Image (cartoon, rainbow over all chains, first blue to last red; front, top):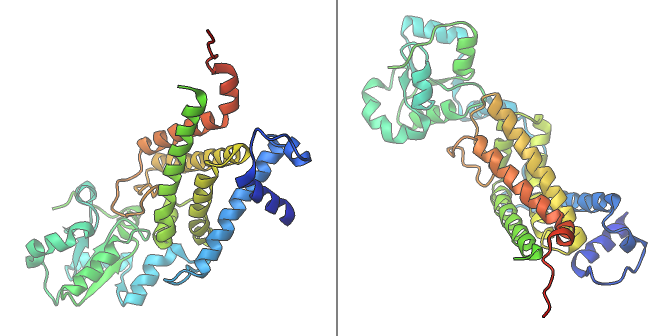
Length: 190
Length: 149
């Protein structure tokens, strides 16, 4: 297998379609097994180079495996952002103890958001925070949310707000999808 | 214009496309891994492996398609398989309404969402790769005969 792969790699740069066939392998060229073999060689070459380069990456190797499904939660915990569950969000909004901030796009916000939520899209947070700063108080707790536990926007917005001096920011990780799935009302945005 | 010229243009185009597609992913594998995750088609345990190896397979295919006959056909086959898989993955996610970026040439999370134009573009590249593979057949059937005085 290794010798065959070596021969195949050498022929990668040396073969000439006008040369007469020199071996059974040359005679076999163009057949489906030969094509499959060469495709396999190309794939293996890519895999070996990719894994080898990762080992010597100057910025550090990417781990072979990572719990991507929990990445937002893991990062929130690492950054010291507290999480808030669905029932607590319902209570906080009902009693008015927290300000809810929607980190999604304006279109998503208009389509339906948590009752009383403010729109501050993560992508425009730096530009729009100045205009909306009246709504924030350093002492009032803020809940950030986006669509689900798969989106980064609410966490990134929580980190941004903390940088702006909002000391008590909590993340509603499950987001608006969990809110809707639980049958709670949404409103068209303000 | 003869068949060889047309297929050479196709080979150069595919090589350029796959080279451009590979470079960004090789430089930023974490971002590409996140992009793969957002397609929600692979289990967590496979995502980093694919993010680390797929760009290099694309790069190898981009180089091999410029190589002589047998390797050209192998690279074209591999390119057709990859483009077909990408087109299926995008179609599936468009149909189930996922709002994600393509991740084809850039993994910028604020890039435009995937749409049918991405799928059509991939199908166009597949047609080019099929023409490249069929060079011999096209030469036999459509090559213009030389005129002699």
